[in-house]
Length: 115
Image 1 (cartoon, rainbow, N blue to C red):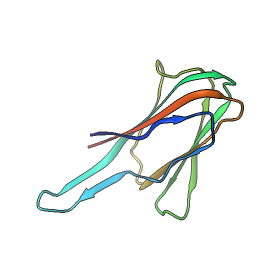
Image 2 (tube, rainbow, N blue to C red):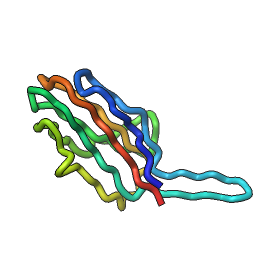
Image 3 (cartoon, one colour):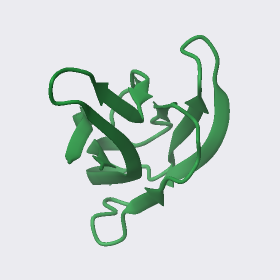
Image 4 (tube, helix red, strand yellow):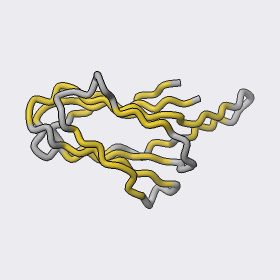
């Protein structure tokens, strides 16, 4: 199951995502347990600047975070070479913070693949 957790977010402003749960559990007569296996990050339509930064944070708690990685948004689009992270870690949550710096225009999509 592929879920877009950030949809067409503007890259012309600061962005902070909500915490994204990497484990989905639905307990009912048909119990479902899904675990995130990958995260894909796509940006497009940036007009100028090409110096934005997307920071990725991980955690097991909603009130704490650990820095994981900086992704440099340094081209008009990364559609032909997207950021794709295979997840094998045991952390529970991930979130993103985007600093536009001098970037103008653009949009961001982040999807998580669960199985």
